[in-house]
Image (tube, rainbow, N blue to C red; front, top):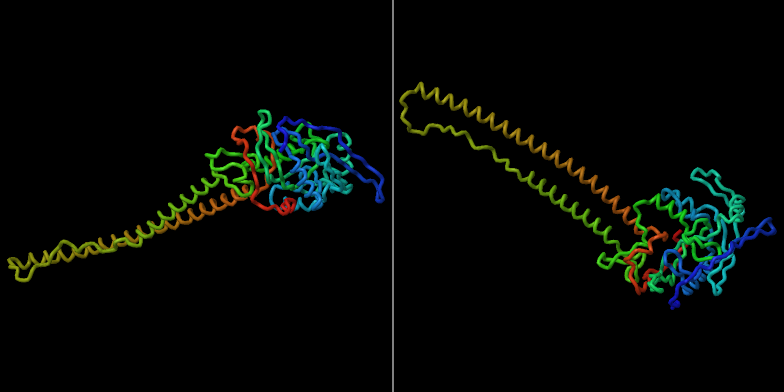
Length: 382
């Protein structure tokens, strides 16, 4: 357990150097990527968390990039291409002391910053000059919370991070913590977050968002990142499914009605033939009457035929309308499927914590978290 006290930032000057090596100049930066200080979004990285981070550093070669280039990209293809770019540096030494986790990085002098057209927009020489001048003096760490708990520290609701899955470490000049430089608390880059948020305006910030229990979910042990639900998204999906079911039932009913239309022909003409045995008083008049009846019957048949034709025309028109509605519904279904896929992609996207989210009143005190999910290697997610 961490002592119940207010933590302060341990800031210091940037540590960097360039020495002559076997292949020429060698460049190094060194600093604390994590301490037990309280940052501006009320997060504290505990000693257990730092020990776990040390194990992750020892278990694989974690690379350093510039402003999280490996996560940038306007689309999936560009994002995949960015993952193939040369890293800015590699971790060669890590130590734990009473202040925190300190890492030494050897930088890659062949590194270049490229734009989307592969034009060089920054050379390593320019980058190093900015490091020497103090413009790039912080680390930004992308991670997935694995185990955390809420703790009240002298009236401040702080989240104690006991374990995180490291995804990426970047060199930046704009950390969330204004005191966070190479020898201070874990830094999260405002510049990169702002750029990413502009590309995904509607994307939820999954790690920082929380709900009251009556909202059916909170980011706690019971609903950890990666294995929890977003009720507002699920309600939207259920609403879409319900609408689609109603439309399908309606169209099926219309089709059934069209198939069972009464095609019985109209009744015969009201004209009746004379019954056998009727008394004929005027043969000439009867003949005229009979001729008129025949003509009337023929007229009725023509009228009846026209009505049948009109009825078939109406049926054909309605069938065309139903087919048109079916086509429209298929288009709507496809659009809803695309929307659902986008919502699912939102749930699968790694989060990056930004400033201001921790002050939400709906964070719950004394909630311990454990991720049911097994993270084999968070950096493998990059």
